Length: 357
Image 1 (tube, helix red, strand yellow):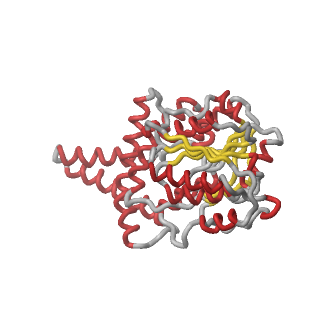
Image 2: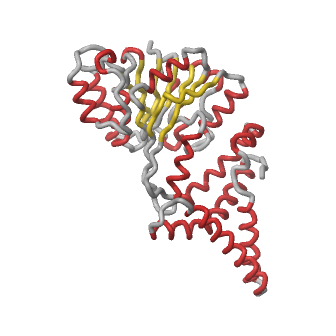
Image 3: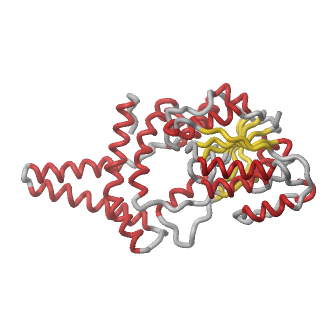
């Protein structure tokens, strides 16, 4: 029986997973006390080979905590360096690495995490992502906090911004102030069993960790924050116009609100600015003016929408990159974001029969 199991869902992020596994193998916690459970949503031969290589390596060597100690946090780890460290240590025990393929990738990461923690052998469960790099004392810090009698622990997520961050990077970095995100949290396994794990209605990565957090709050679970349990979460490059695709998350807001209306309002708020609806109304005026050949109505709607768009674009550009491509992206997406956000909010409200404004 392992004391703590680390559960990591992954999907075609082989290089990132490789670095994450290197960081986990280098933990300063006794390797006989933890296991690593990889749940492969992509069911990919390449991912399987990455895991198999680490399984083979750890079958021969382990990191000896007393010899190596906690290495300083450098913001990243080199797989070759970790392999060299492993090769320099004595033959002994090693953390078990297990691989679970997912046959239906459309089930999402909530499903993958449920598969992982239910198959885990540990009394405690640690969650992180395949694109995270845990500090070498991460597991030890999280386990120590749980052993103080807590049911759940949230750690600190560090995200390093560039000197000229994009709007996407600024938004992504807000994870650093979030509570109980699956990039860095720990639970007692029996607490997850009582709560039912992650709600698999969230088929994309959005709110499933907050939903579980809210459920535990309502069950009066003992929860705490451990700032010294740190993972680095690099901000990945995003495709052009990613903010438009992200508006689909407003659909899932309805699930969270329906299940936890009080906590939603307390910790999330409205979830969408009220002026988005004003932008939609102005667009309706503009289109109606064109259809019915009422130029003053079209002018009113179009001018109002343009003013809101310019204000929104300026707000998003504040303290962000001034690269021409980024400015163009902000200008285009600022006019469309309110429309898409309201559309997905309405779809979610109708689908789950709940209205919140």
